[in-house]
Length: 547
Image (cartoon, rainbow, N blue to C red):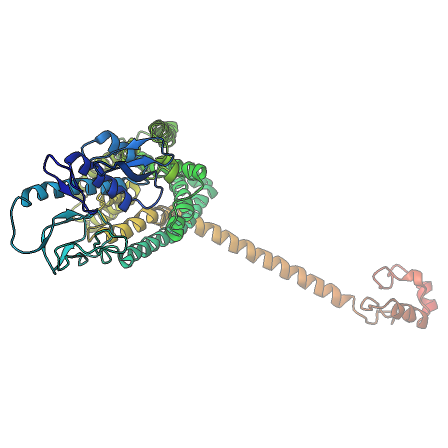
């Protein structure tokens, strides 16, 4: 189809369209070919006279003719997509289509000898004029994710100068290499490995944190110390984050990649998402509390902190306020994007998702920067103190050790994780795995350094162990003494002949034996005690009668 008038651009059906119709058609086709799930629109011929294709809502109540320059319609359609990445891919496809149109206008003015296939847009890629009987290849489009670097798309120009058509009578391009599932499956498998590593490290960290908190609270001499109280709250914040992260990884993260499904319990998923924001941010504020407390302790050595109530309010209250603010902003933002949030549990549901995330992310970065300043000043104080005793190398070693100990306590290791490479960069896999380990191993590291390797804790554990061993020794000695006493009593009460030649009875287990003994020796039954021993209080007359 060719419309008379201005210069035209060609698309995959063979139609040559005006600029406006070309923009609408190619952008609509990009949507059709790229968006394969949660489709809110379908393509249809908006104007058969011009060959223009547009988008219609699922209930056919609205018509949208998108173009890369119409931000209103582009953003509206993007809000129906599950991720920002899909929106960006679609926009890139629309822009590439228009660049193809400009190239067609530039090169179609020149005349070539022989048979050539015309320059065209196939829905994903722009193909130049190609000599008949040739196969032309292009690199895969940049907006197609997880394509191998060496993969290429191929298009065949037939001997009669027309692009080869498939059974549907549309011009065909071979994108098999670009759409190979091998590369995508490798990414999925790697993502599953990272998730499993996160779950394993996080589980170990939870055990360490629970044990550390239990030890701190077990001994009164430890739990009354202000420093230990701050450690307990930092460990609690890491414990809360670990539990929430574990639930998120198991219920949401791993399930989505294992089942290849984005359909979850939306209410439960969103609640867990909000809790995850709180759990992620709380440790940063408690790390700042640790940094400020230690810095203040070195600056004002002889001035004891009277109360820790302000630390408690700041450490727990600030992330709570930020999370509530984020939740309100997220709900307000979602009120104008009806389908995005419902489809994907608030995970990159709109272009405003990352902007709202700064409500929580910016204060945590500020906490790290303040802790970095505290760390530098503490290091300066330690170096100054070491210089006062230069002849003591052990002091220098202690200062170095103290410096490294403060890094996980202040959260300075998080600076190594700020940079996040894209999925196309070679360092992406390394940073994903390293980030999963470092983030979830913080609980293990601080528990080992500040609890299990703490001299005070070890001293109390040894003291408890020695006390337990002493108590066990006393119990064994008491048991042994009781056993010896019982043995002597048993020996004294065994069957023997008393001073009057009469037998003592206690070792008989059958009452009949006792009765026979009494009968054979003419002993009255009243002379027996309940334990079978002859009553020593019997008078001599009775004894004479027996004799």
